Image (cartoon, rainbow, N blue to C red; front, side, top):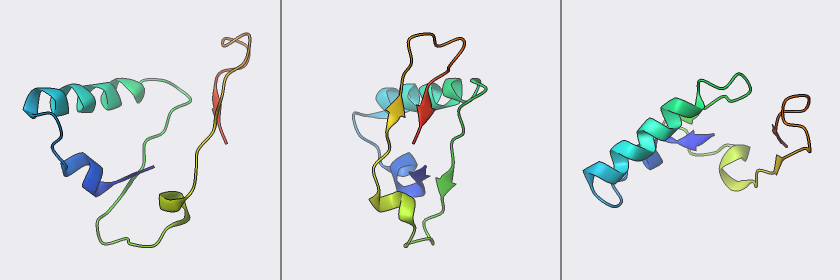
Length: 68
């Protein structure tokens, strides 16, 4: 989950920002990846202040990575 602000904040210049957005777009092609963007008008959401854990397993084909 991303806030809208992180998509608008230009860090490293246009080339870096473009590469980061391309990486996000590429990640959406994975069946087990969902990218959600909270609009800037949403200021209170549990996802903003919580941690995310990505679990990796020995056989990524049988058990793809999970976020918890």
